[in-house]
Length: 112
Image (tube, rainbow, N blue to C red; front, side, top):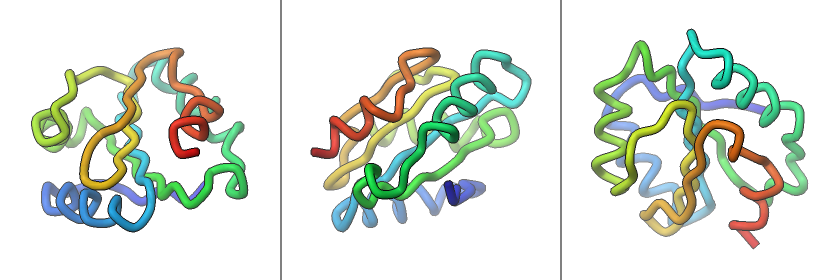
């Protein structure tokens, strides 16, 4: 899995624009939370590039970049959660999940 790291607010618009070409996954991770670590590990172990159907994964350390996390929640009209995944397609969040509801197979279902 090749994560793109989010570290500035300008990337939010970049993600929105890319989502018109292919789906974009945003994983908001709390580096001090065991549930977040478990969810991230499950995602990385389950990731299959062929099944991912072109999903481009982005990673946000929300403790280091909480302001960016808040802007993502505002711009894509979702409630902030931690951990949380958002699937962005055609400029909008079409799916979000948090905690142990974060599952690779469910993301793939949203793309098909």
